[in-house]
Length: 335
Image (cartoon, rainbow, N blue to C red):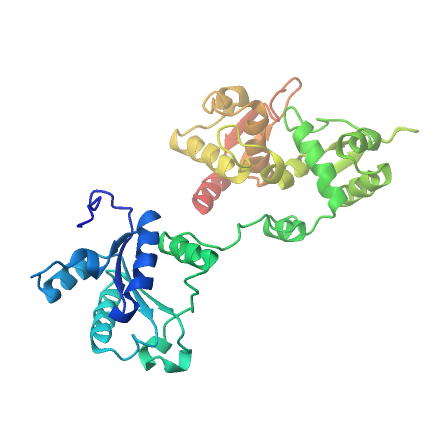
């Protein structure tokens, strides 16, 4: 009986199955199993009918296959007809038309030809359900490679540029970045106890983190007696926003440098000599004041603009901006 192929399904693996006639019964069982599991198998007993040209039928089967599979048994090794099929399968593989696969059953590696020894020819137990299922999964392109897990914490820190900071400093900085409403000095003011409650760190660990950040000039502690209040300085946002400030439009962190470059380019492209911060913010409606300030902080710290801050400039970190020659250089270097 001629089996009907679903030729329109381009995702169906099409396999040419070469074997010795002495192994036809066991090969037929494997072919049936592969057909049952979605592999379109060219098997001589199904494809070649009385009066057909063997060569033409085989050439037709080879020309349409995505996989060439040969079953290497003691009966198949050295058999001229099987060797011819192997030659054809190898040529198809070299030309990129199909994948060459060879399975050993009752044959040792040292019994293979020099060519076959260069290929992966695993031994298979055709009575093993697990091994046959593994073969079928491989033909379907399913990998047994384990799923990729998350990188260890120490690797993640190194990869993201946080390797210079202690874990407690990172935790405190993350709290300040995520708690800040607008990303400006004094926003927020907090205490080690408050940070401890929010992060789960001990109060002493928080104090150590604050000390690390203070030594780097990124936070300021109050001079009041009997108080441990502290707050971020602008440098903290410049250092840590890119790690902990979520982008409002994308599933990643906000890129302060990229945002600062966009602001610099707008100032230059529109030949702006000076502009109020609130007017400039209107040009970037996709950003909240928190994100707009992150970009401005970066520009100001890089001295890529002149800024003037007056009373009541909130929610912005400055009142007025003026581009200068550094603005142009900043835009060019970071475009």
